[in-house]
Image (cartoon, protein in one colour):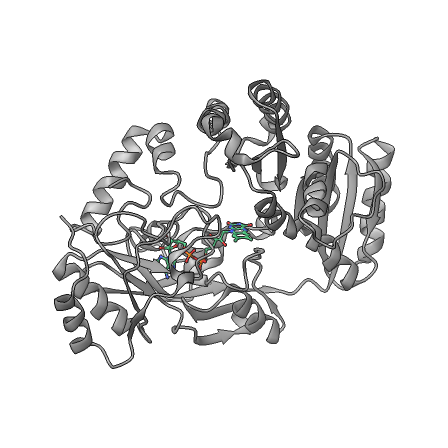
Length: 470
Ligand SMILES: Cc1cc2nc3c(=O)[nH]c(=O)nc-3n(C[C@H](O)[C@H](O)[C@H](O)COP(=O)(O)OP(=O)(O)OC[C@H]3O[C@@H](n4cnc5c(N)ncnc54)[C@H](O)[C@@H]3O)c2cc1C
């Protein structure tokens, strides 16, 4: 049984913390990017260091007050806002933004959890190193939030998810105990892997306060191409060809449909695709190459081979950093364009690679048989991750589809499950997908998850209602 934050509890916190650590939550702490889940307006705690996080959690645990950790508020499954239940304490790590150390010769960096992803990338860049996690939300998203959601993004094909980029974490348990796990080791087989348990747990098992992260040598040359392909199946063949020719040098391989570009125009974005007419399907490829290789020649060679096999019909290859950035901007602005158009429902799914073309075709046909909709399918094809989002027909409003939205979402998720896919590829479960996890999750795994939650957070104070239902 949880208790709402009350004056007595706040007095305890005020007594145990230095001055200035409590504030009123601002609107940004109470909303999420989709604008669908309003957060309960609890008071805001702004710790400056890990010891203060420990004081806060042990007070919450003693008083059985729920605590929602807020990173940058960019999560897409409403994990960062508690929409129902007793008034929570909102714990923001936005004042914990220090870089604790960087070791370029070891390719490691240690940062506090409130540092934004963009700031971590810049800190690495300043030492001639790459931190390869890259998301359109990186200006606001924090490294704590990235690790808590095991974020993916555009470079997973080459460098892995956030989990693969993390060497160690410092985290505070519900009891207030601090796990000191920041060792910068590539190998450490000493018992249960608590780091990997806490990563991806969306603030339900512990609060991450700092992390040691892997860095990489900066690829010396980058080249980006936007290519017109006939179909998702052709895009997949192109991926196989690119892997055979350039192996580990491919740092991005994104599929986009014409709908994404239509939405950029409809949403009023001043971004033009370099094709007229627009092809139905496009692929964005990024190569990051060592200095000794000629990046443009490598991409042009790939294009020539793909054209010979009839896999690509047209394409542009960046000749400068500005052009490369422009091509990426097209891809990275599509989620914003989607928001302006307003989806009926969005699906962040992953599938076995071989199942993707059939899924796109069959799901599209079955959904269009149900309702007059537009589908914007795009995503990280190299990782088998599609964003399969449904929108109203032109001139219609998403409200008109309210009665059918659930049925359409179920259809997508049931097809994904039947194909051995995942109903949440990179955004997590949060509050949006708890019912999906209960429905499609393996029963024994769900039971083990509940027992782990009870063991680490016996009073259920950490982000109640996220991942596992209340
Ligand atoms: C435009 C846009 C593009 C995006 N693109 C991608 C993408 O390509 N790939 C992708 O994977 N995601 C993407 N996202 C989703 C989002 O950016 C990620 O989920 C991000 O990792 C969340 O970080 P945050 O700091 O904003 O966390 P929040 O949104 O504040 O929190 C997310 C979850 O993590 C928990 N949490 C936050 N900080 C901590 C902490 N220190 N310790 C424990 N728990 C914590 C919260 O309680 C919540 O459950 C995108 C979002 C937007 C808006």
